[in-house]
Image (tube, rainbow, N blue to C red; front, side):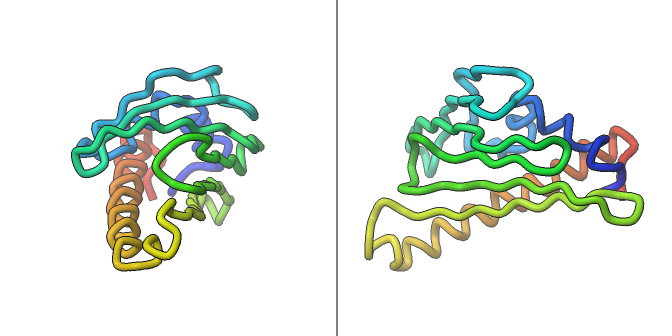
Length: 145
């Protein structure tokens, strides 16, 4: 991604931009945000559709270190555990944006069955869409590769 972390990070500081990065099939809708721009302790409540099932999700920002890192953690939602780290690393004349997600399903041993592969596949599609949208947004801002 072209642009420095200082150029790129502010886009992610507005929770409203999350809607732009989420696939339409999820019908993602932010319901409440306790601070805009985001900071440590910000709570985001949103709804989405997972395979046509409505889901409420609450996320808390546990770590906020602009312009290099932030971490969100699910407080309520479809996963037993969800920890999502966003890293912005300067490389040459641009920025590498990396998402690291650690999650666990509620279903115990069943969560390690083929269901895990199904969920993992869904997440890969969601993050592939996100990656493409980040590219589109930043290309339009003049920060393309």
